[in-house]
Length: 267
Image 1 (cartoon, rainbow, N blue to C red):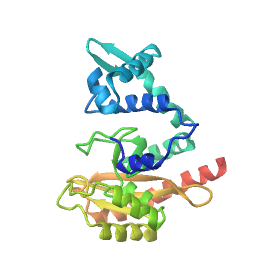
Image 2 (image 1 turned 120 degrees about the vertical axis):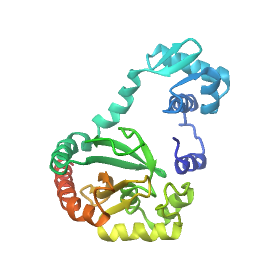
Image 3 (image 1 turned 60 degrees about the horizontal axis):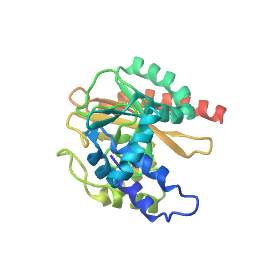
């Protein structure tokens, strides 16, 4: 899923002499493959990437020669080698090595799934996840995206923005009711995010999916800037929001302190 905010930001950028259009088109072809389109024809790739068939074909054949794309009959698909690109990000991110053992300790302690995400446009992107059991209909894995405005980690990440930047993100977001509990008023959302900034954590109770309750805290760099968010997710039929806060917030905050201290020492 492409972030509308990111798209708007890209649209405002004027290509300069340093802008390599062919490279940008190659990335658009890679991004055209998704969970809803894992195998595509040439015409489908061209349409999803916003290219003509000739241009899409050249890029696909280049990616195929490099081993990133496989060709099966009329269809193209990404190969496992594309994971090298994602691993390059993870391997250069301190959170990867420092946070995972802490998350595993936390999951063993509370027996609920733990995730870390970063903000990209109007969405959060999962960069680490230690699951226990599947509690969401949405299949979450590293690289998964969710709307920031109605997720606990998203609201934590949005709380680190300036008021103007937050207003821009909310204006660019597709705000709609996912459940009967979803808050859809931009004004009230801004107030809730301001409260998250004051409280130092966010709890979202069944706003994204019925039966899902999650609580998140920020991860910060040495300067105190929010660089990621970490959450615990649980079944709302097992815990009320108040029980989630009492039971999970203290160990979640303690885990965040451990990660923040490790990040400060490494920086």
